[in-house]
Image 1 (cartoon, rainbow, N blue to C red):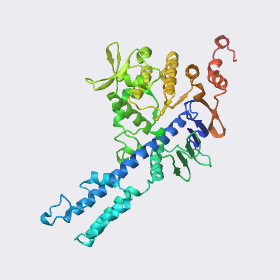
Image 2: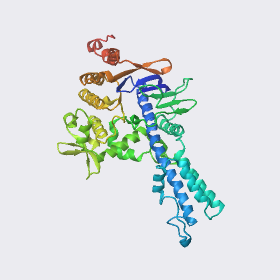
Image 3: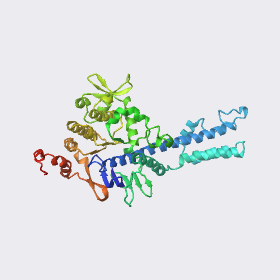
Image 4: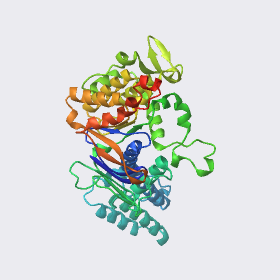
Length: 444
């Protein structure tokens, strides 16, 4: 896949390949996180819309069938009618479930609907009642034959996500407007296309299985705040009148918290974890223990040497590996559910940065698309080393945020010029290496 972004937040332009392990490097406030949040918003809107459309259609269909059956019963038709000897047997299936099943088996929905319409015409009831029945029948036909208006639903969903993730700071001041496109490898038609100020959304490949879900990890520290964050609501969940009473958090945090909370049902399923990965990952060897669920405390805990430690009392670095364990064991990331992690090195000392990079490469090698942002030379070099060791370096892409006019940045691919990246990352350390010169008051 490829994500193209224009004029979003700090980013003027970005063309990011997403067909493997993608690493985005840059200084603080350089737009690195914007790429991840845009990708999260796009994939979430696609997956949420796909699910909600099917559920909405099913709900509406059931509603119209039930309405039709109630009207038929009221005029003495059907097995549940109270009309006694005047009861007529209906040609319709016995209940809503059988009606839906029959609708999906018939060769022609129009002919099936037409047959029921003729039956209604022959009923001894008022014209008004016949008209109401015909209306129900017509709505049933529309639910079964009308094409999904996915573009409108997708626009609504994406708008919610953008408002939640960026509030009023989505676009920048460039007059060309915002543009976001997510393409498959063949770049024929986009999975997703958005443009503003026209505010047009288009989507193709509606049945694409590669975009089932996405997880964005901002920080593992949320692990010891799960109860509080579960009470908080994402943007659309909170009525404006109640916002002062209930904290509001971005959608990606709510999504992360819900997955961590749901993972407790799977914790300890090491078989599933090791089956998923080509190379098994044993958290005990890295952090000396693993996360589990304590029924007595009703809490996720870190188990080490037969001791159960609450997340609040667990080191930040241990939480990082714990989050990976829970995402994997819960099945929340896989080949169709990408992982986005923002600056994982923030809570890891250099040795564990290297270990974490090793695990990330192993996860990618097992098929999970991964996007990582970083400003750590340790972490960057570890990704480079282990991707070479695991024979997947041809599928790793590196990008660096480059400043342009007007405090905006462009994402430049630097996969074949990583020495330039290391030089930039090492520059601050180089400036403070000569301690003797500092003692002598020299400015080198």
